[in-house]
Image (cartoon, rainbow, N blue to C red; front, side, top):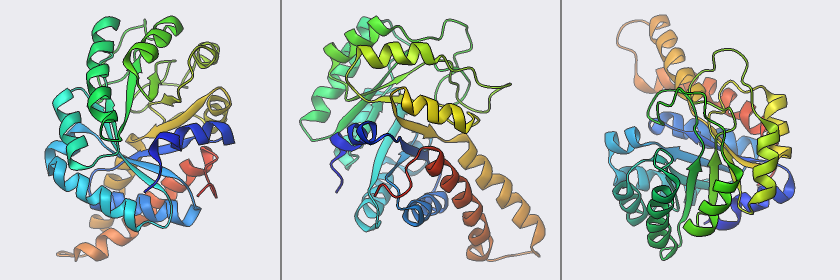
Amino acid sequence: MIAQKDLLIKAGEMGYAVPAFNYSDIWDLKAIIEAAEEERAIIMVSANPLVIEAFGVELNAAMGKAVMEKASVPVLLHLDHSFSEEMCYAAIDAGFPSVMMDASKYPLEENIKIVNRVVDYAHKRGVIVEAELGRIRGKGIEGDFTGDDFLVDPAECVTLVKESGADSLAIGIGNAHGFYKGKPELNFKRLEEVNNAVDVPLVLHGGTGIPEEDIRKAILGGINKINVGTIIHCTYMNNLKAELNRLPENPYTLDVMKPVREKIKEVVKGWIRSCLCTNRA
């Protein structure tokens, strides 16, 4: 299995970012893995709380274990945007090698305490932990912040990293979950300030819709992991709908899903290339 603690550190040293793709079920998970193998890329596959609740933590862990062991490229299973300590503990116990404890809605001191408890539990079991600071805008399972006070405070980043022991940090620099309304306006100056202030890998959530030139600029600025979710499930559902409308009544599942998987793979490959992650395996 990949040495998860060094995964993002290596990406920073080598000038690329590890793309973390959110999956919804076995079909898009399989497409993501196939795309990574064909691109010879290092990736993470992420289950958000809705997916955990739908299939159970054990089944998600079992699927993740299978792809981590069988894929021809390094793959790391990740619990994305858990707002629950208990879900983090359950995922760790089930075999997830990486979890995110998002306590960013709380004041800094409470955020630190919550993340530190998860870090203490995780590190004893060889699991890495991602925390979050700043406000990542948008609505959905990842949160529903819609205000203007979204930029992360570099001084708070220093305090959280030092006192919580988090292995990586997701930051709010103008990024948003879901589709953007207009062109995304990332604050690269704030990214530079945070990158200079802390020594852990930085994570950019809300990748869908950010132009490739801004993705590359963010990587140069210190982003080591980029989350991509919305475009994956939208590609899945829209192409599934089109395929079902095209086919006669009572089609076979495997016949329907093959072309849908190919469309998902095209999107995943594009993101792998944007993250400069091709041929890093």
